[in-house]
Image (cartoon, rainbow, N blue to C red):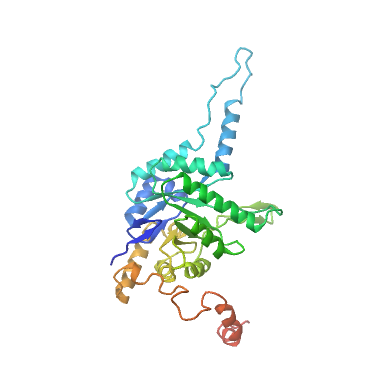
Length: 336
């Protein structure tokens, strides 16, 4: 079977990409993922806040004992913090270690930082940049239009500054996600990652304190990504990558049928090990043989909105179906 696909204009040997996580910080693990069949790797995000925090911590450490000796103004030399240098060196090392494409992930606060860091990232030799638009909006004075316009301006500036492909990783929490994606697509986005899994706080009721659980995705968490992959497929120029809740081969096949070009996986690797990549590819190959498909393009988008007969399949169909057939569902799932 020919499993090749194209993502961000980059030809991949198959549709499975390792998403940004701590997994790929270990070069040995990255090599194992490549050997298991991964087609590309997204390196862990470079967060601007993290750089500012590192700079502040280093400054404190350098001057912790300043002026404690009357004959010595400082115990340490003045050292300028290297900023993202360590991250960039690690990114370059990963690119040199594996033979599959490496995509950098970037999350910044200020417009100038997006462009500056994107230029630095390009110098490492990576194959593309993923703009990780991970943010929680808490400003009540900012309109939805302002938020979207800011994101599009960032995309335009980064695209103008670098010569490698640029994708955007979005959350589903926009007033009209379809319109935002269309606008980004027309402004040069090479791909869309659907969706960013936002980490949500929880409360420890015993200690009456906030806690931050590390929530891995589960089977079925991919429904929203599936819906929008189906809605967007064949309607935009950029590639589609489904993310969150891609656990096994069935999920992989489902997303391709909906119209995704690739998927990103993380949680399933933590849960099932590196071998899960191999299993998913084996499941895909077995299914393609059974269905007599020779290549991915033979069935990609076969069940996207544009290709299915039911015009409501990706809209309100499930909800209306549930209301119309509520008695059948209560028989199947009786409440005791």
